[in-house]
Length: 427
Image (cartoon, rainbow, N blue to C red; front, side, top):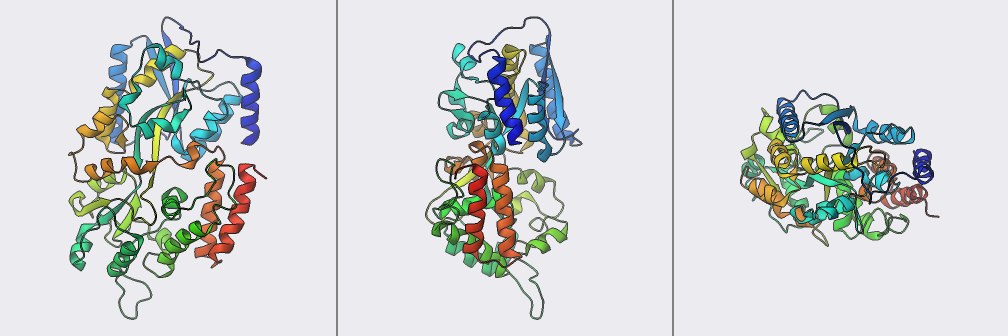
């Protein structure tokens, strides 16, 4: 991947392609290609959304045809796009995920959209500033946002009511969360495992990095160039010990138990709390085992600070785009009011358009809590550090070593920090 990125940078320097500050107008009928991840959808709502978007675009821009290029598998998306860039066969536009945005931004693979926006006094103020900022570098803008979500904590109201426990509220602490986990974990005498757990922990680094931030720790230094002294800091160790001890204390199912179930333990009523994004609401609405009215959502419990992570998707223009003016029009359209309203109806994420997000504040009982917590959400490291996918792999292996291999927390952190240090490239 690093070699591909190096080749990409060299190509653009040597090729001397058109500057993003001088967009050219192709004129006439054109075809634009947009790459996104995933195959053909079997979701009727998603298909209807795409049909409505396509019809509206064709109505207002009949001479600009859009061809979607689906790349199945999120793990294949980035490598295949990088390969197409090196081969000079890249699409005109791409779906840019916050978790991998830095790979494209830092390697000169995208056009700066700021000149296009400035030329027509485009109002960037319609978007949440921290969401728009994910794809900004100083005065440069490399994508317009579509939707996003802060990571939040869901809880099963029925299990809380049955146990006679008050619902959690904003401002609750780690200790309150831990005590709630204990009260909601039910183990029968003689049973080798609880019949109900207070929490479910998933070893997915995007879903647990917030614990580190809340404790004042982190994976990397503020400039993203060092891990030693940060991942293996006292603050980070306290966070990792906290959430791994929850599993070791049997307040959450083991990693192997979670993997072997084959069902969502939260929706099945076997787990009282879980961390997830806005997309889970879609699942609750369709679930046969849990109803949306039985689910509550609250900010994450805090230690030193109130903070969470946000994951976002937007649209960017590649440096090799052959029709930049037309591509800018389509990116504006996808991030504009018509598509934003249609996308928000799907419920997968929150509209990045603040007014449209507020329009939906009372469409479901969980929406106000999500909206009120947007201000506490910060970007994932993948929006700023290009090798962060490898960092996440190391982080997952580190937690596996602690929970499965019983490696001491401090040792696991120190070894992982050295590996990450080599990955981010700072001696």
